[in-house]
Each structure stands twice: as structure tokens, then as C-alpha cells.
Image 1 (cartoon, rainbow, N blue to C red):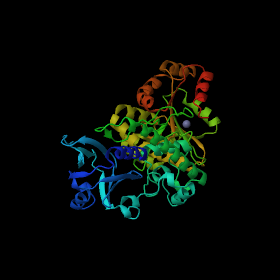
Image 2 (spheres, helix red, strand yellow; image 1 turned 45 degrees about the horizontal axis):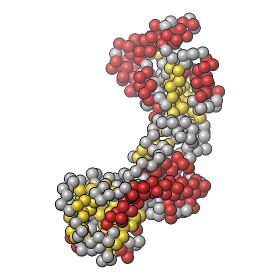
Image 3 (tube, rainbow, N blue to C red; image 1 turned 180 degrees about the horizontal axis):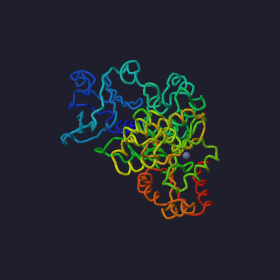
Image 4 (cartoon, rainbow, N blue to C red; image 1 turned 135 degrees about the vertical axis):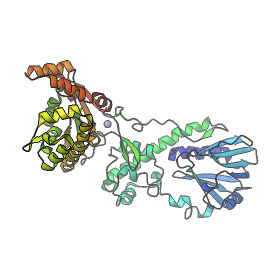
Length: 463
Ligand SMILES: [Zn+2]
């Protein structure tokens, strides 16, 4: 999707290639993208000379010598190409402008979202697309932004994309600007301080100017017939870098969906005083999860113990009733859980196991959500959940960590405690290790002595 710097580059390239040219003929290949009477649109353009190309936000305005202007909103995928007349049309061409010098400007749009508008040049600031676009960061102060955001109880990430409020910031630069200002994209726009609004304006100007400058370099190599879409490789810090180490602190970059758009950010650098930092921890039985949980508890993490929560659920009458309906009434004897029966029922029937999970996971997840909601702002929370990923509790976590150890070592530890090992081997088969390995942000191996294990936990820098 073109953003302000790309559209500015397109504007500069168009200016170099079509300024002063006289339009001979206009072909509208998809009239519904023209937000004016198509006949008026053609009549205004044909035989006019292009005097200037202006831009506001992500919209272009072509000023003609007859007092009219036409606008082009590139939306998602709009591109311009300069060809020679007679060159074959592309199936995604929506508008063709043939000039008297034999050249031909083609507007091409795979998504077909781009629109064209017509207006009088003198009314450009009061009527038409430019009047509906808010000021660019270059024309806005932090104080004005804070004022504009004062009633916006939505994530700042979404608020920054709202073109009538602040124009020219799209999804890519939005992530970059918030990373540069160390603001969590989920922070509510109306909760931003003046200092944060000042920082947003300052960083927006810096990043957009740098991008325009980088885009400017493509002008030199621009040839007629080239694709005028202005896209270029700007050095991005977080956008599209999910899972890669943050350039500032080394913690993994994460992606969240806000307002239907993805946002990339560093949960560590962009932590706010009110942010709750949630670490999900999981691992197969006897890998060392308890040792890790104790380590983080000692570092001030509040502990959510999914096993304990599940056991307490089994005490509730209505839950017992539901579980009995899934596994059979033998699941509980005199209100007490019949562990042996439950285990064998689950091993015998995959369908029953699935049904029980479908019932229990959402209950545990709801408890986890409540636990996080109740925790004080700014707290660190440990979600200790053996089935972190199947239960989708990982979606509540800032980061997830898998504690793993080779099976032989886990068996050895168990034997050392003088406990039977057969059930461990059975449980190991059931643990979704591959899924956890794929999804976890951190994998910490516990295959050496305790000191080494604790050092590895410490080196994750999550204390
Ligand atoms: Zn970072």
C-alpha cells in the first residue's frame, strides 16, 4: 500500500514526466472509479495542459490550465505507468491519458480501489478530496495532535491511520513511528501524554522525510515507461520483522492485529507504565517448568497456575455434571474426582478427550483473562500452563517460553524422586512438543545442571 513518501515520490516523478504536456484523449476503462460525471471528467481533461501535480496525504491533484483539477487517490495498489500510445493495455488499467506528444499515462490498479475526482482548482482547499484530508505531521504540533486524540478511546495504532485527523501515515510507518517513540501500539490515543504526542509528531516528520529522501533517489534512475509506484527499500526497524530480535534490546519483535491491521512492535522497548507484561510458560512434564516458575516468581512475577485452576474447577458441582455427561458418571465418586477412571476414559476415547478439552480450555482461559484483568497495571504475570498453545492462552501472553529437556533426563529426575516412570512416557506422547517448539518465543533447554538452567533463564533478559 503506498504511503505518503511513496505518493510523494510518484508526484515528483509525474511532475518530471508530464508537466507541461497537453492531454489529447482520455479513456475511462472503469467508469465507476470516477467520482464525477464521466463525460464532464473527460471534457475537463481533454485539450488541457497539466500545469502542476500536488499531493496531500496520499492523494494526488493534477492542476490543469483551464481552472480544473483532477484528483487521483491511489488507495491500496494504485500505480502509474508512462507508455507510448498504442502500447497494449493491461487488464488492470483503469484510466488512460494520451498526450499530444505521443506518450500515454496509464493508471493501473490490481485491487480497483483507486478513485478519481474532479473539481475547480480554486476550491481545492474547501471542496473535494483535499478538503477531507487532515493535516500531515509536517503541519501539525504535538499539542494539536493531543487535542485531536482527546476523544479517541482507540489504540494509538488505529488512531494514527485516521486520515481526516492526521494524514499520510499508513500501516508501515505507523509501526515504525511507534517503535521510534517507544509507545505501545495498544495504548489508547486519549491516554497519550503531551510529551508522547510531541514525540509522535517529531518522529513522524523524521521518518517520513527520510523515506521521501530515500524515494527521491529513484527519480534519477527513472525512465519513461518505468513503473511509477515510488516503492523503495527503506531500512525498517520493526515492520515485517516478527520473531526477529529488536534492534534496540534483542527481544523478539511481535505482531498484533488492531483494527484489522497488523502492527509490529517490541513489547519490551514499547512497554508503558500501565502495560501488563505476561509471560506464558509451558513444557513437557518434568522438563523443569516448576524450577522456571519459581525463578520468575522470585523476580516478582504474579503466578497463574493452570493446573491448580483446573483442579479447583473439578470441585464445582456444575462442572462435575458436565464432565460426567462427557466421560460417564463414574468420573466422580461422592463428589470426588475419580482420577484413575478419568485417565483411562481419556486414553480409550479420542472423541471424549476432545470433548473434554473443548469444554475445559475456554473455562481455564476465562480464568486466565480474569487473572490478568485483576493484576495491577505495570505488573509482570507468569501464565504457567502445561497446554499453553492448545488452550490458546498463549494469545493472552506478551511472550511465550518453552522449557524442554531430553526424555531420558526427565525420566532420570523422576526415578531419582522414586516415582513410577511409565506414566511420564505416556504423558510425553500426549504433549504437543512440535507445536510448542514452532510457536514459543523462547526455548530454554534444561539439559545440564540447575545453575546452567537458571543462567539460561536469566540470559533471556525477562527478569
Ligand atoms: Zn526492544
